[in-house]
Image (tube, rainbow, N blue to C red; front, side):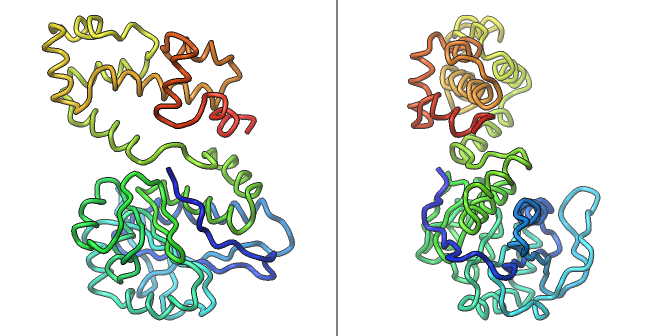
Length: 341
């Protein structure tokens, strides 16, 4: 689960905006920049208390235009050079990007030296996705818990064994340094920063407006596992996996699935595990759990009806699945993430 217990809160209402620098570079992942900036912009919109809580600036090592890694060559216009940033930065957020972009910004710019010059005067430094490699290269994560995109956790640990990697975390708070998982997890992290700075009601307002979880359930393995399963499967099995996800309440027993796949039960079970790394029963349970979560978030149906429509045989089976995988009851999940939360 996301680590949120060690954020450094503002002790008093801000008398002036907290200055936040989001750092990009050629090859940056566009959403790593846009996501966090939108969170803080939305916080300013929903907190009209005279003085907006945040002043956000997009910066880069040399300033000027920055070309992202996005298809079509999306370019961010004029960015502020590091040397031109004000001294009183409250937070620095480092975006992730391509391997080429990261190598260039780590080894071919003055970014690391600049970060070290700011570490005693900046309240917090944070990274989005593979931006953690920048913090790691500067030694900022040594002896700390940290995370990055699920596909890069092993590499980060290999390059910097001094870091305690938490591969399943959406984000990790190890003050004064904060790291987040892949791409959209930077939005989760920034929502938590808003909550620490401005209170839970402010963060909830931002989350609702952006149609986001206030706190996303589970860890990033729920995404990496699902994606890798479907990517590694053959086209024939991938079609069946999609059918399971789309209709989890169907008969998804081994005999029924094997028949749909045109295999014997034994061959189907063996092939399924070989291609996906999991069993048919485990995949089906996950698909049903995800459908139940979606219904709890968006409908006012009774728990018994949700259990039926999700493919669980009974309300008791639904309860056991939630406790097993999420550690909470369906009722608690609805209270936290439902439309009336």
